[in-house]
Image (cartoon, rainbow, N blue to C red; front, top):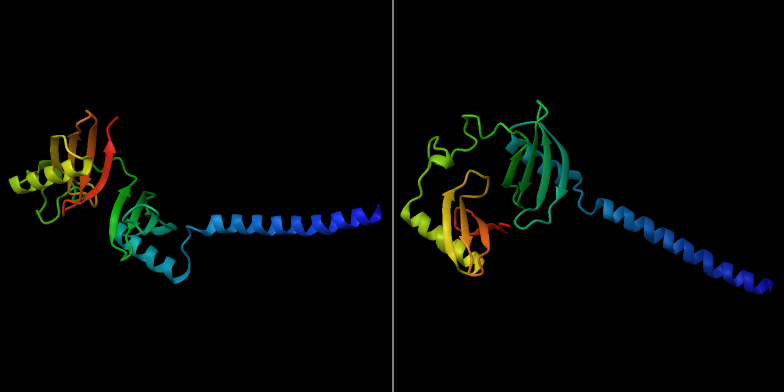
Length: 188
């Protein structure tokens, strides 16, 4: 009887130890998989703070979203939070300010680049832009009817299109300046 108890202890103790070590390692890996540290964190944080116009990077993570390498939360001196998405070259992909006043202010944030102060809402598309945006949006959803195409003031998005596909589903398609699809969402 004493031999069986010893055998069980010899098997049970190493098994429990292995489970504890693997469990702790898994928790550590899951907690640190998206974190950015060291020199890499410093470079990414500096790029995001520069893009936000100052402040402090309070969170720096790797991103798994297409076209993004990093996601950084920057807190400005006035408490405003700015979420910045950067690509691998630390260029800004998306900038989202936690400020509901953006659309009501008469500042440069919604100006179309290269137009000397023209808001995206006020800018007219050229025939070539409209045609290219329509073709890209139709290709993105597999055909249908373009309902609307407008310029966008969202960072990284130059054109916003609404398309109804052959099945009657309406899609919001965001395109960049080269008419590549940034996002495609079914409008339910």
